[in-house]
Image (cartoon, rainbow, N blue to C red):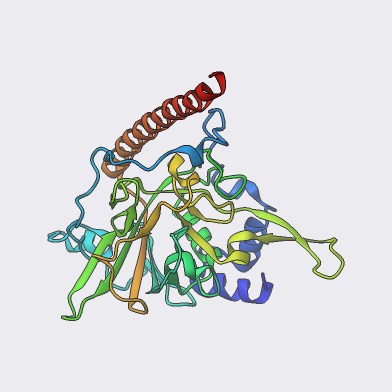
Length: 334
């Protein structure tokens, strides 16, 4: 990352909150004591090798949103919210504007990012990437630097968890929960806002993805390798910046926000909900928000129900697999 641009971004955007020097030290690990401690990963046995075996099925995940959910109100609050302060503050000392017009609402712990609707030609592996990223398998393209999102979430007090070790890792990521919303204007200039999960179809159930939220995994740093020599340069690179990866549906070590379920290790199951989404190229806004206590409880409940369903589907598939193997061996005995 260019140190001059980093310094300019942080000093200009956060002012007296964080100086450019402190940003550099925190971001590259020099003052870890200033950062919230990382969440400890769940102590569970890895399920690598089983993720791809979660089969397609007609069973519905409990408490899924309806096939066509009602839109939320501006900035990710329910439509009809009568509390204007909750619906979104006016410009004030509690609202920061970053270098690419990202809005940071300090009191409400929300970040608003300009974006456009992508035109994916493959199953979704990402909800959102930045310009130059894998827009062919992403729902939206965000106009921002990934490290800005990382630093804002840390500023909000969120704790990074442990992300997947590799693409499609079956182990569930950890990290504080985060809500994601998408907002745009229809042809009548009416603002529509939906939960991110509502805009993704799970092909196993043919319904919108359950409202499980996303886990703040925080991407990771890796050694920079010289392209010509193949040797380490001694520098560290932030993977989200290098890959332009921000919000994942398919488990991705580079993502800042990742799918919190085991289904994130299953490929080719998520597709755009074309019934709700506007056409490709439509300007939109991605809202990333810290859930309140009530929302955290609801996220916990939904994730537990999804985990139960995933386990039942896995057991069902394993039973069917054993039966198939048994039938294949019977002709050999004859």
